[in-house]
Length: 428
Image (cartoon, rainbow, N blue to C red; front, side, top):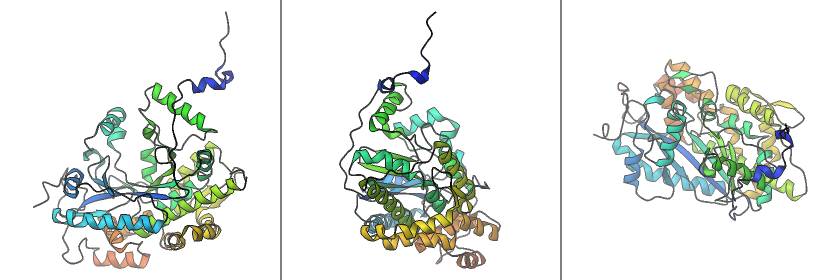
């Protein structure tokens, strides 16, 4: 009987049998694109509304306003820009174009990684084949993707840099995850996690921490295998926390919760852009970028999701650990010259607002605890998106004491929460 060849001795080329070419588009170095997912919130009940299809019809063709998987979500996207400020201008202008459309429907715009009390199982999915296929395959988990995120694309001018930079970003991904953590609640319950969205999203096939591959050919082999075996239909269904975007010529950071305001959105975008540019400069100097073993990456992701700004994270391949706030403070100093070159000094410095006020999950929990109701957390989110910045602890205390009205001019008391709310049954 002839013994079979053990899997670990198979020739390397066997992994490329189904290789699928992934042409990498030309992109200017460290250009930027930002995507921000917004919740559609009923002004009276503060619950989510299934309005996206109706709103998009009213908006018409707008390159900066898109639909998403759930009908309770609208995504604002910037163009491909050179600076964070230009991206924020795109998003702010798109936000302004949305307001006259949603307000007659008694819909407000807000965001966070999750809604403080909405029921995940009554939400509707956008009528699109790719989403229907995902939900059909993933069943209960797919139906529960009531999550909202911030995605940041950064242009990479040389394809050979993409995978080393991807691995290097994983040494700091958990730090950005802590800063953006805004999903402490799930279906009305306090989860004990700063970032419950991360825990939910990784249930999907191909989601979670990326494979750290050594070459572009290996990536093409991976994708070819996944397509051949029916795991995915194309590369866009690889939902890694950090992934290349061959079609755009970028690397995409996808693990951050949705920011609750423009200042923190700008901070996350600036920190991401500076990290990528810094790693790119190191490669130009012939340096080898550090990379964490996969088990460190997974542990960091869990620690950041669980403990948020109190997490002690692994910061290098040697296993050095440090409190997240200490590392972030040092990063802001080290990256200041890069930020000056990229023109995002002000936006990078806005990360300090989060360090001072606490991350969104901390602010939401403070509001809900003080008021004895998760509705207070939702009202806080509405106030922060209007203010364009995180509210301080003192401001949160004052707003809770004042009732945190959803409409400061004509406050409306919450109405009974229906099982499912659409534009049509709330627009009168």
